[in-house]
Image: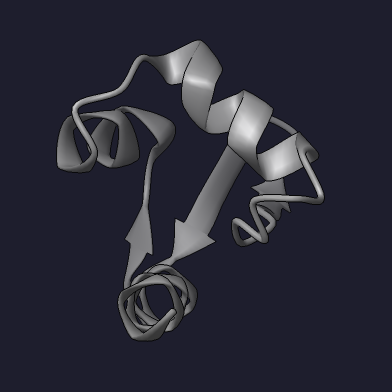
Length: 59
């Protein structure tokens, strides 16, 4: 399983790090929730991100 950091997501969407965190908190965006791997390690599953992108593309 591949995980992405918040910085990788920010680069992927040409957005800022705070924007990625805001999207993850905002229920209207349906942005995937992060996975806490340890106390100082939060990541997003690549498969969740790709599914979200596909959903947005179909809408």
